[in-house]
Image: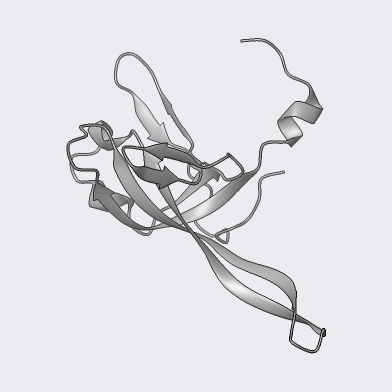
Length: 128
């Protein structure tokens, strides 16, 4: 792989997400559909009179990932905090929009691991 600059790396946004639910994608051996909570989003919006007010909502995203073969029971992923890339452009996989990528490592002999932060950290926390 070619080397990248620190400026290129700085464009990648890594965040802690808490997996809320997992479903097998029908007719796809490898794919799981994850619902992932990345915490609160705070935005300033203008009301009808033009006054700015802070609006808080939850950043819950659907992420499609090819990790199903590594789990006999993928329900073990529910409530786990895992690292994700959160600023990828959305991608449609088997008709499902995916809004991020789970981070994992694997090799040809089948060793596999998701990248877990310390479970004490908050969902939505960004890697620096």
